[in-house]
Length: 59
Image (cartoon, rainbow, N blue to C red; front, side, top):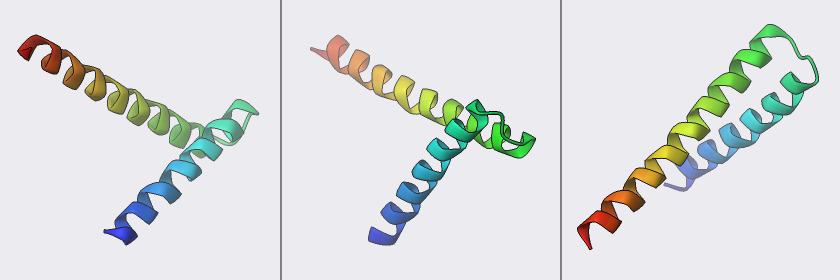
């Protein structure tokens, strides 16, 4: 479990670094990684909103 958490943490930090590098005009592959990171972040954020909505509707 700790190893999995460490892998997720490393991927998150690497994704954030890719977003910063892409903003400064990095190579194409960095822009692709940055896009994937931003999409993944948006999906996580939306899933959290959906959970809150469902919880509010159940009350």
